[in-house]
Structure formats: structure tokens, C-alpha cells
Amino acid sequence: MKLIILSILLVSVLSHTFQDDLVESMPGWGKIDYNLYSGYLNADDAGLRKLHYFFLESQNDPQNDDLIIWLNGGPGCSSLLGLIQENGPFQFKGINTEFTDMSEYSWNREANVLYIESPAGVGFSTIDGEYTYSDDNTANDMMHAYAIWLDLFEESDLNIAGKKTWITGESYAGMYIPFFTNAILDYNEKNDNRINIQGFAIGNGAWILDWNIIVAYQINTYVVQQFMNRDQANLWYDECLGKQNEDSCVEFIQDYVNIANNTDHYSVYNYTYSYASGGGIIANEKQMFQRKVLQMSDSKLAKTLYKLTQEQLKSAPKNQQEDGEQLTPDSIMQKYFNSTEVKEALHVDQSIDWQMCNMTINEQYNSAPNSTYLYPRFFDAGLQVLTYSGNSDAAVQIKYTWECIEDLINNKEYGAEMTVSDEWRQWKQLMPNQQMGGMIQYWDASPKSDSQFAMAMVRAAGHEVPEYQPEASYYMIKQFINGEKI
Image (cartoon, rainbow, N blue to C red; front, side, top):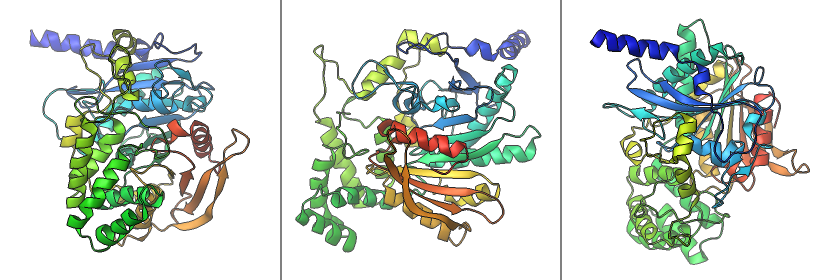
């Protein structure tokens, strides 16, 4: 009997084709003339872990256009956030319950785009049995699943084999992406069917997980941007940063929390919505990284900040409709992906309660100290790397990104041989009307290759750059994957 069951399972797996994953129509989306696919990929040989993917064919030339892989962060948050809040063709904006057509700035206007919900247990991805969450294990599962995806679409007319491939993402993807890229390079060394990896781009990424530094830069943003008065600023600089007197600093932290919880920590000039659903537990992607930061920091300052933040979130005002339903960007998206109609369209398990972020995974995740030590290998391999930061993000602040770059250059153990090739300068987006997109600097990243590293500041963008500046982010990624200067 066992042999018969195994044979049936094997036939089922072998008979599955990419056409079985075709999405006939996406509920709420407008008319499109390109294909969508959604399904599951085994992340291990036994099939205990399955990663859900969503694939957008290019609006332009899917057979010849490059492939972009997109990953959201957390750790533990769904990459479908990127699809319908950031760089997909139809997006939810604010607390509008109807989709907005963003096809003009969708990244699939320029490339095929693959979204993968990772690690196992995130979003519609599934897990059966015990598992240790870590950056290495996440990367290995991603590599296993991606190899299966390549095999699955080999029979399509998309010329998948050899297609130029770029990995993109934001926030904790500053860890996910380098570890995944490293796994791809390992794969290429062992296999003849090499993956044509070209490089990667990371937005407002976490590279070095020194939680105390991250917290300090977050708070400093509010001081520098004049959200604190002069006495509060002096208390911050003298007692908190200068003397590091954590007892005296608590007074400042109380003032800071009152202000920070009434602004959008991830875009300080943007309107904010209540995220107090679920008893005030921090649960969306933006705040999952903040939660990890404050929990992992060993400073009394950070622990006090976390405690006060939680208390205020529980009592935060809620945006409610007449029927009493709490209306936030999070609740709108959660309701959408948990609808029977959407689950049927995506070919996913109806029993799954889709969440933006998995708090259990976030708590259990074992993070590596940093990802910067991997970069010299990427540079020597000739990969192109772009890091970009929205300058209104307080969570992963642009000064923190510069500190990570300084470590990448100057670290005595793994510092890269980088030389500036294009000094810090303005860059302009083509739409609309050649407006200033931000600032950028380029480095020649290795004497062994033509690898270039670029750091871009995106003006008036928050943590999720494509969400706040869709025109600028589209222009930036278009230039990057086409080998053109931004």
C-alpha cells in the first residue's frame, strides 16, 4: 500500500506543469494582456517545506526581458506586500479598498518579476515539522525552490534558461539577498546549468545587525528633523549619546515615544494609520523589523523604548468603518488575501489564514551578525550591486546605511577594494519632467572584475521606496538592470 501511495505522489509531482499554475484572473485587477502564475515549490527533498510563488510576466517582451526576483523582509513577512503595495501593476493605496492601476510604474513593465514568500511558514508558504530558522537555512531553501521553479518553467516559451537574473528586496532582505546570492554562486560552482545571476538591489536594507546602533540612528532622525525641542535634543546628545546615562535618558525616551507613535516611523513626513489591531501587537512588515531591533538590543534604553511603544500601541486610536471594522492598509490587504476567491485564483491552501508577517518566525529567527562579509565574493564575481535608501525612513536610517558601507570598505577582515568612480551627485528621474530623484555615488568594487557598487538616496521616500516614490524607483531599477547609470 505504501508503495502505491508513493507512486501516486510521484506521478502527481512529475505531471505538474507551469500551465497548471496559470492564474486565469486576479480578483479586483483590471484588464491585462500578460500571464500570471501562482503555485508551490518544494524547498526540501522531502517536501516538508513549500514556498509559495507569484510570477508576473513582463508587459514588454517576456521572452527576452530579464528576470527580477523580489523579497520582502521582516524577518517573517510576505513578499506579496511588494506585489500589491509597492511595485506590482495593481496596488492598494492608503485605506482605499479598491486597487489603483500602477501599470505605468510596475517593475514588470521592464522585466519578468517573481515574488517568493520566504521562509517556509510565511504567507501562503507551508511547513510541516520542526525547523531552525536562520539566514543560511532560508537561503538554502530559496535555492532549492528556485531550482525547481526554473525546471518548472523550462517548458514555457520564456527562455528561462540563461535569462539574466536580478534579486531585489528591502529591509531584512539586506540579509536574505546576500545569503541567497551566495547560495546561487555555490550552486553555479557545482552545476553545469548555471544561473545567470547579474547582481542585486537592496532598499533600506539591514546589513549589520548591531541593534544598539540601529536604535540610536532611529531616534537621532527625530532629533535632527526637529521633532524634538532644544531641551529634549540636549538631553539626547548629553545623557543618552554622550554620557550614556540610561536612567536619565528614560525621560527623553518617554517624550520620544509620544512623538514617534504619532508619526509614521517608516516615512516620517507621511500620514499614519493605527496598527493597533490584534491587541496592539506589532504585526506588520514595517514594525516587525523594529520589534526585532528592540528585542535584540541589550541596552536599557531599547528595552524601555519597546515597553513604552507597546503600551501606546495598545491604546492607539483606530480608523473604523460604520460597521466597526478597523480600516488600515494592513487589514485591507489581509482581508483580500484571505478571501475564498483570491485563494482559488492563486491555487493555495484554503485553510491558511494569510498574515502579512509571521510573528512566531520573527521571534524564532536566528540572524547572522552581518551580511557585508559576503560582498567581496560578489564583487570579484563581477556582480552589480545597488543599495538605495529613502531619506524619510527612520527605521533603517540612511546614516546607518552609510555606516554599513564604511564597514564594507574598511573592515580589516573582509573589507573590499573599492574606489570611488562617480562622486556623490544628483540624479534625475525621467518622469515627471526630469525632477530630482535623489543623490547617488558609484564605486569600482573590485580590481578583479567590472563590478560596480552604487549607493542611491531617494528623495522624499520612506522605508518602502517603490510605495512612496513609484516613478523614481521604476526609473532607478530600469537603469540598473539595463547597465545604465542612474
